[in-house]
Image (tube, rainbow, N blue to C red):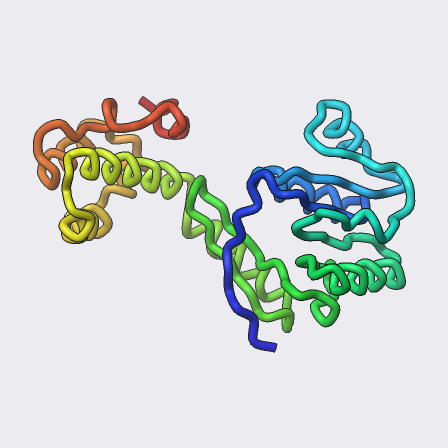
Length: 228
């Protein structure tokens, strides 16, 4: 199987998780982080899912799965230990043209989930096309070591710089050389070492007046703001 790589926008989209155990809970957590409206169907949901339901973060149906649970769903994840049920979810999803992933069963999925390294807006995905999840996990651990929290801060800063340049009516094509300089510099290392003065000196050298870390960062970039 040759999979077509894609990143989905699931913000405010209806997503269903069938299964409320450890795996289902992990899938729910990831969906919520991406802004999905999540419904869980499980006759015996984990305590964490009950807490999420109590706060209104998810909709929880404490019963067995029914085919019409798929109505108006953008995607569904089957995460039960019942092979027959998981395959029924896959069949139902195919019938209504809904995106479907069945945990650890790529042969009955129309999409698979990669291993993920997330550092703020930086998302690195690893897929072995279902051939070796163990290798994907090993590579993920390696990348988690290589790409630390400083990359989230770096990307947030780069976004703020880009927004400011665009607000000054700069053409996006004109930014390429500037951003390549920032990427090729030791800006990531300076952020990791929390060297604010050196960061500002580097920004001045490459960008000129009006670019300093204190003024650039929006409130949403809490990682760096907490360091300063």
